[in-house]
Length: 465
Picture 1 (cartoon, rainbow, N blue to C red):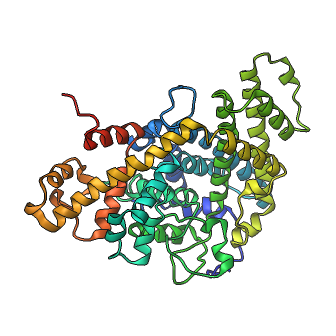
Picture 2 (cartoon, rainbow, N blue to C red):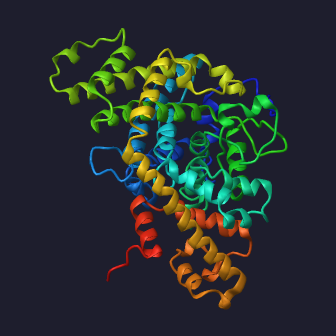
Picture 3 (cartoon, helix red, strand yellow):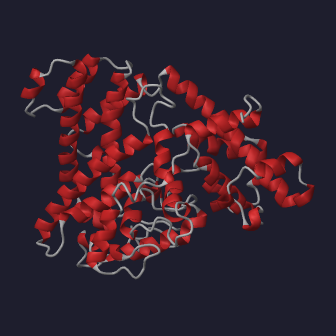
């Protein structure tokens, strides 16, 4: 049960009306007019033309370093999720406004918050796909050096590395690493940061079995270094706290729609990508999507000649149907969501849930485990594990031995950007700070840069003038 009592008059609009005016780093921006201008700008191309977003073009979605220019990267995936998220937010917003007869609020405000959070949802993912997260985790868990250096950390600090999480890294990028000279990093609204955070808890928690089984407790959403910052966000938007002794809250209501936008997009579009690369047959894709669209008007489908365009048509129709089903489930469970009692993925409760599960199952068997995917993801363990080792051993050597550090350590530390070191380009005094900054550095690399740097530092290839 959530500890923080629910206000009797609480309705969903409180998250998008009063409380979301607060913007990290722009605390004086309080008027609705100023807020709407800021949040609208937050989803524009100009605002998101930061290096972190541009780098998503060279980060893996499913097929690492794919040679085909059709296959989606993290950037194209994020743009698609943002479009789906805006639709979800706008539809739900309109229904909520009508249900509660709300005045002076526009449904587009819901859509703007969700679109912003969706656009950023993968920004913290390390290079080389999901194997990137596992590579970092495994280095701290299995390597002799990794196991030794985290011994001095607290349980919660160790959890940040043993369970390294791209979602937590993303919160750190948005609120601190991107535009580091600004208070609040990118200075997004608290509502956007809260909606972004699918797992609003720290890495190490203890509690009742029923709370630990919550969908939102599956992973964690912020590092110890950012715990106080997220606590400020949670307090500003009124998140319900689950445990008094841990930094652990119920989800922001709009986080459910951000998650659903991602689930809809990757399920359907990864399926389409699997077909386009020849891993899944046209017959299998068309049969399953037509089954999902049972009851829908598919007259136009019969007039399409090319198989590729048929799949594109079915993909678009499927996403539209799933958006409407998710909106229905969200509105059906609105009260339970606000009470913190509902904690399931919305896509698991829609009428098409079984079809989605079937699609995911086929993608896992035929697309996600394709030989080229497995080969490059396996290589990711070597690449990222070695990069972490090179830079962590170097900063620790320099921190401990200063001028007596190994020449190699001194050379390697010169390759680390100033942002990931302490004052005067010296390593921080405490181990946790050194580790978190090196994981910031490595996880922020693109696929191409990580592989290239690994080859150079390993002597496999040499830099050219």
